[in-house]
Amino acid sequence: MSLSLNIESIILLLFFIAPGFLFTRTYTAYRPRYYRAPNTFAQLILAIVGSAVIHATLLLGVALGLLIYWLMTGQSPPLPTVSVLLTTYEAPAIALAILLTIIYLVFSLILARRGGTFLGRQPLTARPRLWRILLGDDPPEPNLLWHTVLQIDPLNLNLIPPYLTVQLRNGEYFEGELYQMRLVGDEENTVELAMRSIKHRPANASPADLAPLPDRVILLKSTDILWITRNDIPQ
Image (cartoon, rainbow, N blue to C red; front, side, top):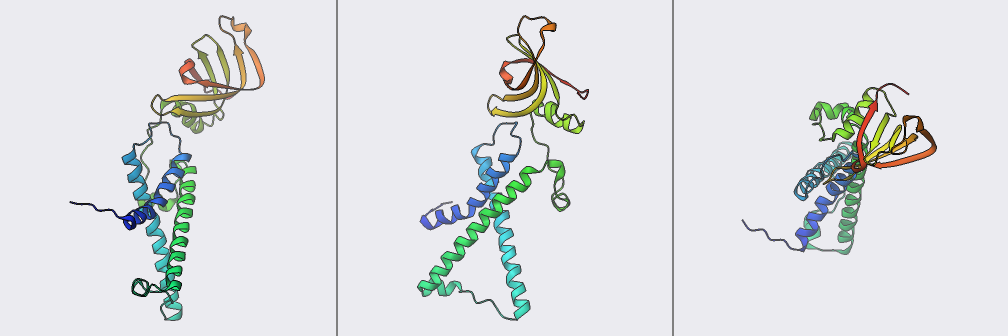
């Protein structure tokens, strides 16, 4: 099997895959990436599948629009045919074809961005009803235990924000509310925690030395944490 790519093929490939790439980047930006990032092959497949869905949706809309126009007027819409564009190369026809191509590409990118934002902001348990009827439930995401214990479980138990107790490797001790958490290293699974309403105790100090730190937000890395606990009693 031979594969020949000329400039036209490359342009068509980029034209086809651009919406799917934008959709994938937008969707994954909203998802909790508490797992290793997909490799290049997986990202390419996601972009191709997303592009196919986006182009099929737009072409379905164009087909329905043409069908509605024909039902209402009984005539075909005044669009230049492919034979006219390929044989005559008249300037107005070429300009119209370029304009329609650009409009189509812009709409496909807008649909990709809006679709990625809409689906990315929703949790997996809150998919639209039509989505669940056609596609069923989404498979579980490979979340880290940090994300499950510190975010998913407190949300299900109505413990927002969760109250944490943290002991660092250097002996420092913190109590406070979890403010934010994110993964900062896909390969090493390094997690950053942001806590507020903090109570702090220095290393090698007695329990009575626990003192509040008002109006502070403390940033901690999982690599510096010796152990961490979650208090399930509402504060």
